[in-house]
Amino acid sequence: MAQVTPIEDYAIIGDTRSIALVSRNGSIDWLCWPRFDSRSVFARILDPDRGGHFSIAPDAPFRTTRRYDGNILITTFTTDTGVAQLIDLMPVMREEEKRKRLAPFRQLLRRIECIEGSVPIVVEYAPRPDYARNHAGLELRYGNVFCVDGPTVFHLHTNAGVTLDRDVAHARFTLARGEHRSFALAFDSHSPAVYPHVEEGIEETKKFWSDWIAKLKYDGPYRDHVERSAFALKLMTYAPSGAIIAAPTTSLPEQIGGIRNWDYRYCWLRDAAFTVAAMNDLGYDIESGAFVDWLMYATRLTHPSLQILYDVFGESRLPERQLDHFAGYRGSKPVRIGNDARGQFQLDVYAEVLGAAEEHFNDFPDKPMMHDARKMLTRLADIVVKRWREPDSGIWEKRSGRRQHVHGKVMAWAALDCAQRLFGKNDVWSRECDAIKREVIARGFNTQLNSFVSEYDGNELDASLLYITRVGFVEPDDPRMLGTIDAIRKQLGRDELIYRYDTRGTEDGLPPGEGAFLPCSFWLVEALAFAGRGDEARDVFEKLIARANDVGLLSEEIDVASGAFLGNFPQALTHIGLVNAAICLSEEGRTRRGLRRKERGQGS
Image: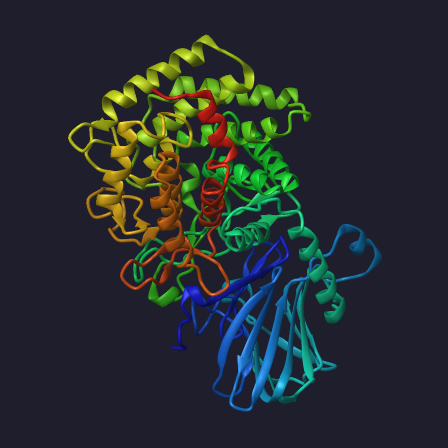
């Protein structure tokens, strides 16, 4: 079996439609085309022998350093004889440029250049379409490599001089200083194929990302980390619809060898208000507005019911299947595509949709809310009135049936609280708000633990309870909140890292075991900062950002013992958590949403 690359050794490139994972060794080991949740072209990260890859690296021992220029990845290989630089990107063209020039539907550009001495280079191109279920069928035509998969054409245009060995294309050459070779991989849904232009694509893409990041309004501490998170979030945004996916990968495990392997190439409603707050505070009003537009469209399709996740076009039918022929990352099976959690009932999603709308329309008061949107959002509040007493599956999508989750009840309260700010005082909503708060305080707070707990009348903790402060359910320095923070750090914390809940002691329908959950760790930063414990918050935050990989990216989870990344990568919710925590530690001391809540003096 081929050697497995650690998750933290990957960087990403993308074009706001799809994303490729590139290893420190110059290998593209994951790419789905033409969009995030399409079938894979390369999937070596899920099966090192069978998945497919596209590698460019020195044909000699080397050391690697990497950096980003915008969202263009630059990898420097140093050997005993010289230094070579690999540039990787997906071209991003403005709409006016697309109208001027014929270009492939999707493209990926790679350029290897020797900048010192001489360096021998080896290239391997091994596409494996449709999750490696289809034969590659490579053909060499006029020095270019074609792979035809039904009506789809993948074509590799290069000046390197390649040879075919069955289903792998190879190239070997030595570069002297100043020499370079280019590789342009393109996707078209039909023949004949259109050839991409490497040099033009590089320069246009540099300008695109330079212009985009110039709009960033954040000027507080930890700007470099906030900036990289913004770049990552933009890559995980599907530009045609405005949807933001949870992660560009599937089935990277939450525990090595475990079965908690899920497909995250979709959009979760639970992240909505967090996302809009982060993008608004960074100054990316267009992106946050597009996301809210997608949110309103997608939820209208299933209204009055809300699913917890949708695809980038609002499709709600995402059946979960297993790819049994894949070995899985480090043997972690099954490999899944689709996600059956879509059918769960989660109370918190109503608050997320209402909260995202509030974030958006409050920040843009001159943008009127359409009548249909008002009608739909008020109906969501009415549904909360009818259903908040029901058990739900909880924010963590446990597969053990519905329970009376405290976080869900708090978010039901937040939904009605939010609705009244959006649409005015409502006696029914107000009465139910009060009822929810009374019940949560009576049954969701454990006096012996001095903490809010995961379920009514229970004694298990849940890190989602750190969110209570952010939605204004209690004051940040309320003794019950302070007790909750301390109890979670004691029972679920390992220094700066926080587990979601104790999988060993909680029945969630799956075998126990997972890593510490990074979004919750950033929620801890916010909870500490809100509570006036700024020094502790900064200490936790600085330890967390030190865990990012060499190009500033973070995964969903981390193995506490080894520090290795776990879960799908990079994780949007982690980077959203980083942004919101950094803003919370800035001179404002709060996110905008936090400021509004504090100024209202809400809480009991």
